[in-house]
Length: 344
Length: 251
Image (cartoon, rainbow over all chains, first blue to last red; front, side, top):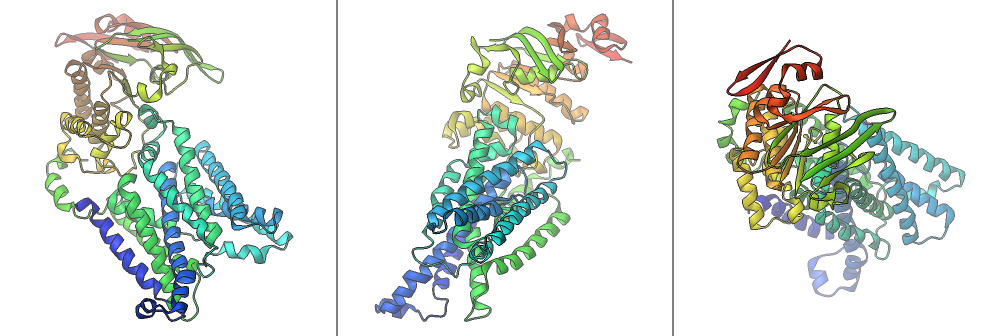
């Protein structure tokens, strides 16, 4: 039971936040109105509030799980959809769709975006595997550079064909455009996260290295590319619907891992819940600060995310690789008296 | 049954393993020794299917190694290399549980859990089982990896330079464990070692490599002679008999 303590707490918090977010907005809506069958209020709920909430939840889950998978497979804690060229590749795919099929549907754009995101992520990982870096920090730097090159290419093409206006929706993430009929694609995250959960152990083992996985009878390349594909499609399906949101895929998995370790089976649900909660809280802040207007989610996530990230770095500097233990502290302290002898 | 037939491996122009053939005696400890670049680790890689030979093949239970299904092979043969990601925040128990992966995929049964418990106790890791491997000392971590290999429950255990980065105390303990794996659990253990005296004291057979070829393969007594060792390492050796085992002094 103790193991699932954090999961339960997160689930309860998410439920509370979800419900309260439904009643947050310009148009009046309250429980008594809904119960008495006020058509306008029910419509507000079904057309705008509920789709927005579901899109937010899927976004948080999708991006943080994508980040978790990428970090494990690349053996690098700083890799994520935004530092691994996945997001910028997805945007590039959308631009290509806009250029070649001007009146494409959301599914058409998604298709191009998936392909581009998958190829971009593969290329990035292939590159960092070819050129092994001594410093772990080099990997995300290369990823950011690579992402910027693709982003530059995207902007260039957008300028040339006067697409900047159309493209801007996908450059900065925002939930304000989420309405019924335009966001359902983001549900794709649900089956993908379930697949990720089924293959959690495979991803963990691949994260231990090529020899390690081969010893256990796992085809390293197959699982690596499958995992990256899942992460890329997860990311792209979010980017197509709400646009780019940075930091989530980087911070959420790292924070959860500090408490719960790297065993994906044990962290995936927490990561997904915390990711959803994080995005939801950021969105609620964005909606309340300058009421009745709203700030784009990207801005709030950026501010909160960078503060958390700096905190994370300071914690690492101070405590090294030591993890935060919840609940099990008694357990470890009573055992750690004897092994001290063997430690350096 | 493991038979190595005419293995050749080239990296670019350089032939690192040249026509190596020998048979691994079952239920024994076999050490592969030799100077740096003699090809022993590459041979180990080919025996364990991590490295594909250019020419020749390894025969394992009457079947060519690369015809084996990887998952099936991992129930018969375990390899531990030095190239594992040690940054991962996994507990010792979670690591050992991976040893059961070839049998159960991700879902362990009661039987698996029992085997995991036994493996952890066998390596005396009970009190560490909930600690993260990246917070352990080198010796403890190596023990955790060995526990995983025990949980993998294979007939053959291959260890690539297992004593690397360990101090004398931990290295000696590790070699004692290797002996126990063979004597108590009946496993065939193949090691790549740099310390000749560990090879001499704890193994049954020694396979000495020079320049990608087998210089000599035989029992410890056959290999541990002044002439053979001087030939292999190109330094002067003296052999002393301690506890009935021939140990070497080199200078």
